[in-house]
Length: 478
Ligand code: ASP
Ligand code: MG
Image (tube, rainbow, N blue to C red; front, top):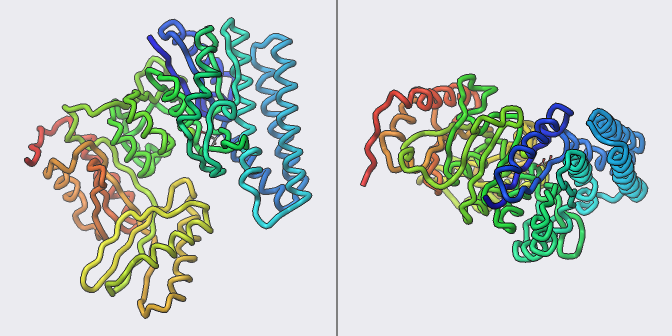
């Protein structure tokens, strides 16, 4: 039945119990598919530690990065100690772990000895990518120990990107050629490649990374180039949830989503998937499943083409942070957008997304998304930086910068069903709405509100999802 790509996230490989699940999943799926392709993240938290080590090296904190290397070594060694591995596999793995961490230490040492003003993104990528190179070797060894032909592959050999270090973009043509050369013959020989997620190589042969959470993207790039039938992303959650379960206790697993819906969900704050992974899958109609490694028999969430009978449903509601820049005056907003862009780039290394701009004869309102990945403190840092810059702007306008929340309801074509939009707005009774936006994808409706109202608004919109079974079908507009 063709090729299945399975990507295992950090939380699904970090312990012996998790790896035992991984093994039994691979043993099971092998019977159902012609070929399996595995993509792996680093163990939970490892990439964060590696990046921390790079920063400590940058400030010449030798003790700090050495301590991290030692912790990583202990963690990986104790994991393989507990795994049912033969002496040969274990010894080889130990040597691999030591070599990779030794290289990482050398890199840190170089950074610490020749500190420059900014940590080079090239070196950062080389340090950050060590986690996946470690975990891929561990999984491949575990497969071999169980009579499967697992081979660890560094994606630097197969995924080619531009040289935007830290957030590289794949060159699909080159990648396809490499994959056909290196990986297709392996699949023909029944080998199960265990490919490092997250990392890749620039055309010049330097290691790049695909952005935080990039292993998902690796899985989708590889699947595209090898013509995989399906992609399954394994983690320790049951699937995509209708809202953040930490905030909405009755959030439930969404059984099916369209590509549009999942893209909106990823954009508007669901942290479970890398937002760029969807486009290639959508273009090639490769279905994506999100499954819990501890409950493999459950379906999880399936993402595929539009499901016609579910067109009018609200599937999920999310909340993310943003900044609103307002003025009691109408005028060109491009300068303001440039300023916010610069502030975001300086503070968190990410360009701003203008969520909405609206102007009337006497006022201007611009709302920016502050990516969730930037962390909660980023909102305040960026707000201060933007306010300071706008004050210096000699345009005689009194700009105000405030934190806001962007609450988004997501559902394929909800725009075509006015009664759905109306039911959402009804739930906002008494809430001060700063602005409303309908996403260009036509499957989301966002309201911009004050942060203190977000929790209540998410809850009340979510009640529309929980109650939807009882509702009758709304009528679409022509
Ligand atoms: N290990 C990388 C990260 O933590 C990539 C991934 O997990 O998908 O960002
Ligand atoms: Mg992830």
